Image (cartoon, rainbow, N blue to C red; front, side, top):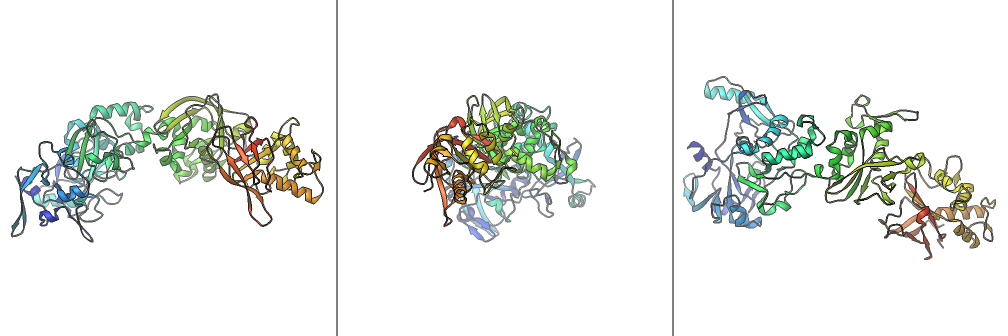
Length: 638
């Protein structure tokens, strides 16, 4: 009886006209409250600790932030839900949102839990009385409901094994002795600080004293059979036991089922959990148990919340220990991008073994910074790199294995793709190469393919590598054979004053920036000579002019055929007017319009509206942050 009475007592006096208003720190906020704090609380209770021993415990009364989880003199009072017209209308809720939880009770416009208010606003000496047509019993907290309902024992086990500890509470122990005259240790049940909230905390966020009036927690909890099936088929697909999983997997899975706000039945699709994902359930078919509790809303379900980190391309690495190194690298910058199921990605996975074979190792001994615990041992010999130096290389490599904005569903035919690093890779017949692979004459083979909600994952037998050559050396390799269509362009570059033959460096082509080279074929170079744009007689090129003006002609011609800080290939993805390296005497930049709307059909338009076609068969040559194309015409800036 005491519990019934105390749960019916609400702090402060509220007539109906104020019952839906929130008592904020700055004053009343109308029509945003649906709960009130009661005089009821659980206090010390009997339970078992994580080892199964009988103990006395008390609930946390704050969410664990890593430093605080309990405040003395706070009884962790329970809240009672109140459904009143002004709140319901203000939140665009209907009677269906109420009867979903209380199908045996009609919505009247002023309901308290499952009861209707039949007489309201009765004044009393010390408050206001509202008469209801049912006895309202004390509601359990989320933690209490899950703990006592055997349908959710598997979910409870996750908390008990990984997410709960019992911490001796000296103040509660002393108070227990003073009240009961018995010396018993009392322990606070503390939930892990990595959780969105503590399911036994009745005080909501406590950002303001009364914020529990205006919002509450929500949990979607899968039943035992559903949870076991998901654990066995998804989480433990590559692990033998839950204990062997990385602990972050447990955190991510549980947090996906926790909302730091109320989720109404009509608003599943528009209410987001602690990791920014909507409730992915059908309120009619997936929810088998629904309860308004003292500190939150509970939905028992026949499916799990399919979290992005598990159902996206990221999940294929995350849930497989053979890809733990790649997962660690993805976690530094790309985890949340590639786990966004509303964005398409293609991911090339590289195993720990493949990274080790390329000379990269996870090594905790090299740094106290967990993000810099890497070692690089060049397979062919050379200087070892550790810490941040090794990480820089690894991040560039990692980024070459992620293709943003595209789900490439097949690698059977030839194609090219821009990676997250801004560099292109090529693929054909289920093989993939990057610039460094091209230099070494190697290719990565696809071992297997998996699909995810936001893209396709290809498992490679070796890493995709970046090139360490200068761009000029790649032009040299393309143009040195006398039969090459790049030969004339290379010959002009070789003797140009902007080129360092020893290093392969081209003036204004800076290391670390992106470029595209459009090299006119031999016939187009001859035509440029005939037009007077390059030194020579008739159509015969003079590759090594001695006259200063002719040298300048060559430099200007070459610079106009290089896009500045822009890397494009024939992937059909990016078109536009892009700046070339050449600048006019007054400092104005030159430009080339690139029409790249159709794969393998790139057309260039110069500044006097002449066009040139990219010769696909001789193009998409991968270089160091640069792609080199062959074109069938020269380009003019004036």
